[in-house]
Every structure is written in C-alpha cells, then in structure tokens.
Image 1 (cartoon, rainbow, N blue to C red):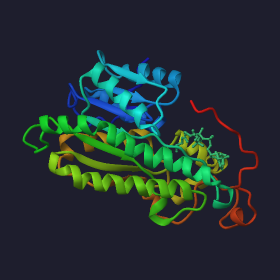
Image 2 (cartoon, rainbow, N blue to C red):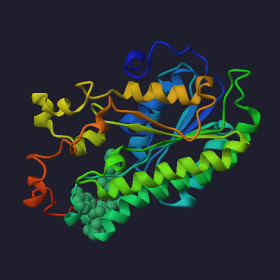
Image 3 (tube, rainbow, N blue to C red):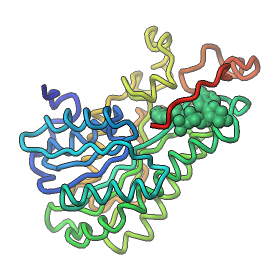
Length: 312
Ligand code: COA
C-alpha cells in the first residue's frame, strides 16, 4: 500500500516537476534516502536505488514504486560503494534500464558510537571507506551521466527542466568536533570537501553539487544507533535541539526536492543543514547514558565484544 504523501513530501511541490528524470541513490533502502527518492518518484522521476543487501534493496524499490502509478524503481543490491567497479556496474545497469541519470544522491553511510579509545585503525578506516571513498566512487561513476544530463538541461532558470545534479548526505559532527564520532566526523568533513570541489570543477559544465546535512531525524537507523531511547521517551533528548523536537524524513525530502528542482538552479557548493538548529548547541549524541565527560573517563562507551558482521 502506498504511504500517504504527507509522510514524505510537503504539499507545496507540483506533481510532474521531475517527469522523465532519473535519480540514482546509494543507500537508497535507508530511512532518509528512501524518503528522498520516494518524494522525487512521486513528483515524476524514475529511480535506481543501490544497496549492499539484495533483499532489503529490492523490497524498498517495490515500496517506493507505489508512490506514483507507472513509476519505475529498480533496486540494485549486492553493491558496495567501496568498490568503484561495483558502482560502475550499477550505473551501467541503471542507464540500460532507465535511459540515463539526471540526479544523484550519495547517501550510503556507516556509523557506530565509539570513543577514540575503542576504535581500531580498521574501524576508523572502515567508516572513511564507506562514507568518503564511497561518496567519491559514487561521484566518479555517475559523472559521465551527470555531464550528459547537464548539457541537456542547462540549469539557467529559463525553463523548469533541470539535470546534472548531485547531493551528498553528510553530518554536522565535524562543525564542532564530536565525542564518540571521530571516525564519522573525519569522514563527513571529507564528503563536504569533495562536494565543494566538485561544485567548482564541474559547475562550468552545468553540474551542481551540494550537501544535505540532516540533524537528528526521527525513526532513522542513524538515531537507532546514535540516540538514546530513554532520553527520547522522557523528552530530554529534544532539549538540546532549539526547535525542541527531532526532524522528520519529510523535511529532508523537501530539501532534496528544492535542490533538484528549478527552485535550486543557482545553489552550488552549498551545505544545507536541516537540523532544527541542533548543531549550534553544545553536546554529544544522545547515546550517552551519563553526562560529558563521565562516559569518556569511565570507558562506558567502548564496545566490549566486537561482533563481526557479514559483508553483504
Ligand atoms: N565500536 C568499535 N568498533 C567497531 C564497532 C563499534 N561499535 N562496530 C564495528 N567496529 C569495527 C570492527 O570491529 C572492525 O574493526 P576490526 O577489524 O579492527 O575489529 C571494523 O569496525 C569493521 O567492521 P566490520 O563489521 O568488519 O565492517 P563492515 O564493513 O561489515 O560494516 C560498519 C561496517 C561497521 C560501519 C557497519 O556498522 C555497517 O555496515 N553499517 C552500515 C549501516 C549504518 O551504519 N548505518 C548508519 C548510518 S548513520
């Protein structure tokens, strides 16, 4: 059954603004990225969503396709953004099945909560590999298609057809530095730098490159990993956010529509933070059971038993 539009898209956007466009999204089976793609599909786009887990990715593709009658959404599983070859094959399949790529969302990410004392060199590298190298591989593999799309859709604002746009999904951790998040902070700083550089290098070819930085968003895998159920239940978690609540996936989807639509024609090299002002207030992720710096001094956030996960 189709999700109600109000769960993933505001009423302000006109149906059909992305007719005949194709979006390619890594991490597309995740809570935030699937809402972004669902919104674009609702407004006319077809999509390829990319993920490591085959079953989860294909199931989500089917669900997203219910957003609009006649929508084509291809779930491409068994793809790891850390492998450029794997990304290039996914792009090839998307182009073969949907005819090209107009918009890219580099959303795949890996994260967990750990102080530096609990991070092995491989743990640190793994997050950089997924977030930073994975974003680079996504850009590299899709650039030829983005160049073609930008040439067809010059983004001048003289008509409403846009193309050749990429959004990287980042985080706010590196704005201030963040306890328990050294790995993700460093990785996302690299993502922001990559987007800014792509904006300058490829702007002259009509491509726009921007970052969307979600803050704490309700019901996401990120918050399940980083948040604290107890403090959410008691409302304490929201006190740090100036708007006194967590955000919704719809609010991230709306930012995505803005940047890809002709409302965002002249936005390039920007970081759009959608976090209710959260990063401006001091504090650590809600994962902490005790106050800063107690959880660092007593090592309570160091993972005791590393559990190996399967690669796919
Ligand atoms: N604390 C400290 N180290 C951890 C950890 C934790 N909670 N979880 C994993 N690691 C370490 C592992 O021990 C390993 O290091 P080692 O070889 O020195 O022991 C390293 O990280 C890689 O772990 P592994 O499970 O082999 O990597 P993977 O590629 O299968 O998984 C992760 C990558 C760890 C990021 C995993 O959490 C993942 O797949 N996440 C994807 C989804 C996600 O994170 N979404 C949230 C987005 S906000």
